[in-house]
Length: 322
Length: 263
Image 1 (cartoon, rainbow over the protein chains, first blue to last red):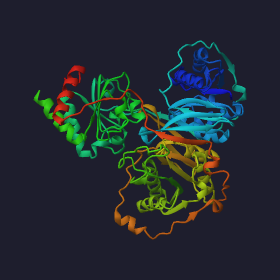
Image 2: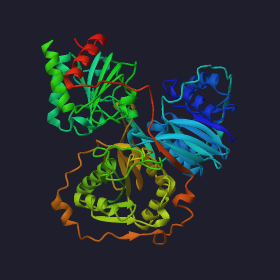
Image 3: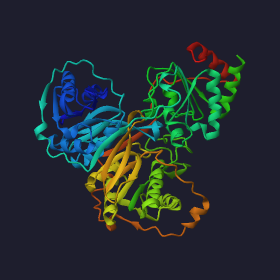
Image 4: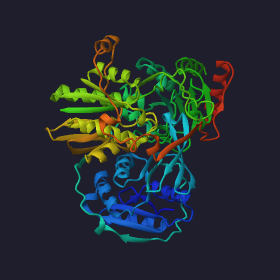
């Protein structure tokens, strides 16, 4: 089996949760593999991350370069092309950085690419057996990937249980000199922080959250009435913000807010992993959806198959009568 | 500015429940309603708005069979100036790299300052834009939710990253951008608009027209292959409340009270 590498994303000198998840994912490909973590960046933050992840990897390859102070996928790609051995398997997190880096890197290294891997079932020779999802999680697929000339796999965050054993005792190897010219056609300018809304849903105990099932802007009022009757706050999934029916600050999901309520009412939300990625702390989840096959029913505690536009007003009435 | 937007015809998930067919080889495609991939529609709208501001031309391109023509026409009714269909039996079964290979050949037949794709489509991979950019040796940015034209060589683009934050970048053209939903409000396309472009000719190019070797595309070249489809079992599954609406609501209120969901 080919040599396995992972790419560690980090911020403020702290490795992302995916650092240990990818170590576990690598073991699913080859339980006996000596896995190497690659960390790019610069200065003391980079050193802190390298030293931290060394406990979980056989080896850590450090690439220190001022051009990598902010993780610009194009510059990182150039560095990786120069240091990865031919035929390597590289695991990336399927986040906004991994999505930027993975596809193009696979072309430049002439390796296979699989996006958003939800599970790794094993290998058959140089063929990787993987699980993915399509149609926002409504169906899953078994996928084979010919890794004979190497592979880049973007692993969905949260699906591999982090390897917390910290027993690898790896050493940090400085590969900075091998990174080559990192000049890029894209330049990072600045980060624009998300706007703060009128309600901070990250602090709400109870959320009534609406998705596509609300159908029309005018129907938001129906959900608002339910939230008021319950003493809950109103939140939503991405399509509602895309349609400009609610403020971005009320969007739950990886591209919105991360919430940790006690009770979460998913009303007309199908339950894509990006949405579920924004719900932490295992709230009691109630899902109402007219599609009995909606993925949300697999993760909710209680499910009701109904049209939310009919169900919510009746529930509101009953709660008001209490 | 010359802009090429890559679009895909996909089953419309807001109109269909997606189910697996009886032998698990595909989704059940009987009676599916198809439409343009939602992300691509935002990309076309963005291209039209850019050209409205700075001048130029928008071309929409799709890889697919004859039925993809209808999707191209819909986007032309929105305001795209030209359509281009890339169609060949040799393209069937292509993986992401195969599709990018076909699109690269089409890009090289034109002279585009900017190529846009949707950030993802029905398979949720989000890979074709990044692959295409790498093949063309052009800069790339994914998940773009803002485009500002600085001059005829430079764009300022915002990427939607975790937590609703926006990463601002300067990028040199020619380049490839994958467009995130919510970047704009795609215009409505009426039946009249569709009729207007009903007779516009859409050129169809095959593998030999594009100079694409049939070894480089299609099922035989694909390193990544879907073996079967199944319905995922992520967790234990919800306890489904059944009965009359009144019974369901009574039960639900009990549960809400017990879990602290009512104040």
